[in-house]
Length: 166
Image (tube, rainbow, N blue to C red; front, side, top):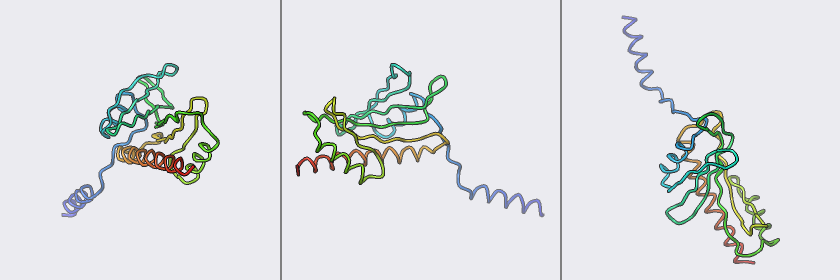
């Protein structure tokens, strides 16, 4: 009777315990393309000419283009523990001190993402890093991709509003 009760209790505890989510510590080019595709993005993946690491070119339904560069890679095929999302925007002119001020104000006001100016190329942009090292769930990656969308939208809004007031 004690054994039966113990077996029933064990079964109940196992059924009641939360499922262990599968974790990932790094992604290959194929996995990166799949993850971005599942997020609803049209994606093509190439290899970085110097490192052979995956680089994804991503197009959103709204026409925004951004890139995801995989870093901290090893193995065959290369699996990478860091993903850097970034989007660059043409200024259509040389960068000014005002552009640097706008970018600095954005960086001071945001927890996630980092804005930058590429003065020699007349570009401004924003990036966001997702660390996989140590293991994260797919849900964590998906929520970070959503956060990336929020970061880009916040940057575009901030930069556009600041340009209108200058």
